[in-house]
Image (cartoon, rainbow, N blue to C red):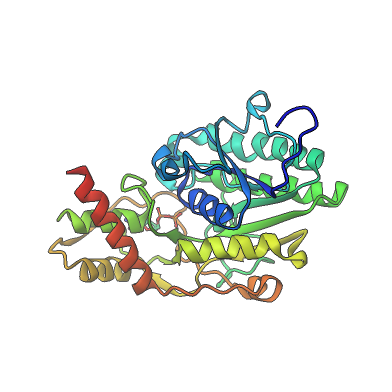
Length: 327
Ligand code: UDP
């Protein structure tokens, strides 16, 4: 990649490419024939998620922190930047609050500058957390949100809100080809058992016979999207000309409460684990969350295909295999 050599293949950068959603996105881009540079500092991502790609001729891994420009070496050609790098599960961003703020602020700025330099497409992975504890339901992209700017979740919520604001400025000021997706709760293979999110907690607890821990009364709702649907959505948005300069929700609008999720997982795993309530809800934990995905359907022709029962079966199978390997 030196002295005037320009790669012939479409080249995509995936930051956070060793993470849960990022690594699935990397797989799909390679299948599509892209050259992929995966950048990850591995604070929450895992090399295990990309180990199967180590000898792939179109794959390159760069262990780097995108909030430090000295660490970015991108080569000669960059067509797409998918910026997914950030701790994303509540226990992880609570553990790394400053890193979370920096990767979403400075990291996003540096990657936007790189996108400008290479004239590449830029996709920001934002989050449903920008809606905070929402007062509008389901959440449309036009809703401004209800966020505590200084609470314990602010490192993530406000980090992503800043990331969205600066992305929109690069669109408005420089006509950069930007897209913002707001990712709602997503689950599937390669979630880490220790990740702390609800689906991974419930499945690992149910499979190992531990109590399944509902935080609070379990009346709070979420809408869970299977990871292959999410990645299909990311690609559909990034390939549509109609989504440039737009913000698009991605998620599955099937909403359930946390108690129902616990019961379903206990039933599907055939587990004897008891379901227990714990007084462990974080401050500002949203009461309900459900995406309006009309815009994704209209602008990118995308809707999710895998229902919760099917997605959970696949995820439970993955967790069972991982559990066997660890024994
Ligand atoms: N939750 C729970 N038990 C767990 C983990 C999480 O009841 O073991 C709840 C949590 O309080 C929240 C919901 O499940 O209301 C979803 O939490 P998660 O950490 O998956 O992500 P969030 O949607 O809050 O970002």
